[in-house]
Structure formats: C-alpha cells, structure tokens
Length: 168
Image 1 (cartoon, rainbow, N blue to C red):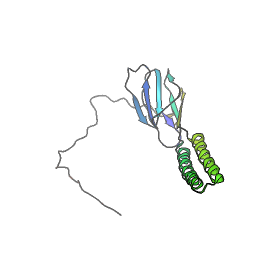
Image 2 (image 1 turned 90 degrees about the vertical axis):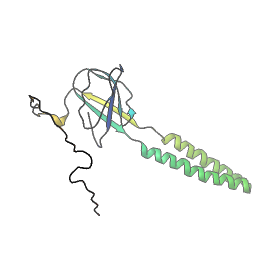
Image 3 (image 1 turned 60 degrees about the horizontal axis):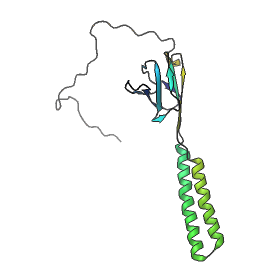
Image 4 (image 1 turned 120 degrees about the vertical axis):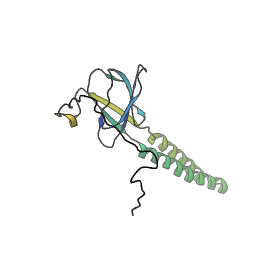
C-alpha cells in the first residue's frame, strides 16, 4: 500500500466479515487474500468496495478538508457575533437598517458555513504490479533451521544502563 505525501493509516475489512481487519501505516506491505474489501484511509471510508483478485499495489489518496472546515466555523462564529450585535443594537435603538444588515450578516455567515463545510475524502486505486520502490529487488533468502529473533528482557530493577537524561 502506497501513497504520495505524509503517511496514511490503511485498514481493510473483508466484505464477508470472516477475516480480521488488516491495517498498516503507509508505505507498507500487507497480505490480503483475494476478495472484496471495504477500505479506510485515516479512518475515512473509501466510497466503493475494492475487489482484489490478484497481487498488486493499492494507491491511496486522502483529501483533508480540515482547513475549509476551520474557515467555515470561523465564518459562522464571527458572523454570529457581528450579526447578533447588530440585531441587538437595532432592537435597542429601533433602527431598521441595522436590523436588516444584522440579519443579512447572520444569513450570509450561515450560508458560507454550509457551502464550505465538507468532510474528508479518501480514494484508492489498484495496480496489478509491485510498488515502484521494490522493482528489481532480489527475492528474500530462504532461511532454514530454527533461526529466529529473540528479545532478552532482564527482570525489572536489574536493567543495566537505565537512566534519565535531560538536554537543552
């Protein structure tokens, strides 16, 4: 699974529901059996089910609209404050122009909010080739015997070299 830009969290749930959800942070390799999958990028569902029938590469594109959502909330808050003040002034001072202007500011800020507030979007495409970063790489060597990695952890309190370092 690959993408352009900052890393994305890919998750794949089989449509049959029999297999456990697979997930990884791109760029990554995850074995997926042939089948139909519902994919998510950074927790956002991809619109269509992805059908995997052969080995290949999934390319994800995540379109974050956090900036426009922030602008939408800012517009609604500032417009609400200004419009509310103008409405209050118009009621206290009996000014029809301030009332209409305040109502217009409230309506405009609400319209801007609904026009610009959009959810994030995720899309995934499939290519039946290995990712470009692994082209022409040698196949991994076959390991024989009982070779495996271990992590030797000494008991608590006997860890040599345990310390605290503070640097400015």
